[in-house]
Amino acid sequence: MRTLLPSLTLALLILGTGCRRGPDVDVDKVPVGTDIQVTRADGGLVEGKLVERDAAAVKVDVGPVTRSVERNKIADVRLKDADNPVRVPEAARFREVIVSADTPLKLRLSTAVGSATSSVEDPVEAELAESVRVDGVTVLPSGSLVRGHVTSAESSGKVKGRSSLALRFDSIVVGGERYPLDARFARTAESTRSKDVQKVAIPAAIGAVIGAIIGDGKGAAIGAAAGGGAGAAVVLSTTGPEIVLALGSVLSLEAGRTVEVRVPIERP
Image (cartoon, rainbow, N blue to C red; front, side, top):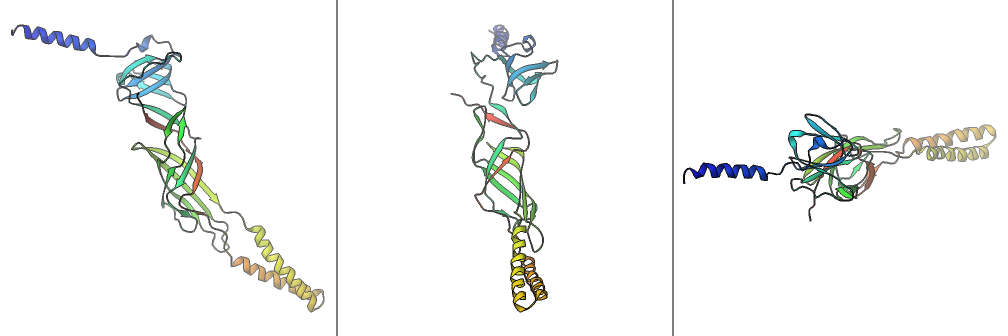
């Protein structure tokens, strides 16, 4: 019995090795330009065209970028055929999907901000108001938490110019993972120059009429000057409009940078 044990153990080891599933395709025999599906050991699924390979890595064009997969981290390689889709390997757990820098985002503010009430570096939170889809797949779901801060806040003040407000959102949280953003928003209040001119011009005209009633042309000039001075005083004592973004305000901006998101693979 004892003499049979070593032989039996050796047979089981050989059988176990033979049953291990390696790559379905020898990547070194696949022509460059072929559509392939590479599964990494960490569960990442890389799909695209084979563009290059060497002793250390395999490079696959996935569209926006070319991804390099180290050979010692490859768990499975399969050919792709549009007419006969291959089954996703069990080892594959997620796809890495590229969100381009110019992807539009709609954010609903969870923090109220304003040119007169906010300060630089104040934290700002928002949620994604609309899902972002890439190639028919939801990559950034609506409701995802977006974080950022105030980068500039200028109150109009007296004779200080127009108010302005700027925000930068630098991260989004999806499925517990944090991804970097560079989404920026800036707004400057409308100019009140034409209204200020009217505030000066109207009192000046009234003053000229009063001066004319008082006497000659000299009186009209004095009245106009006095009236204009009164109008200027009104302008100098009036602040311009402030920028106010209330809770729930929706902002339209762009991602600002390329974002690589891990999207879980859904199985039937």
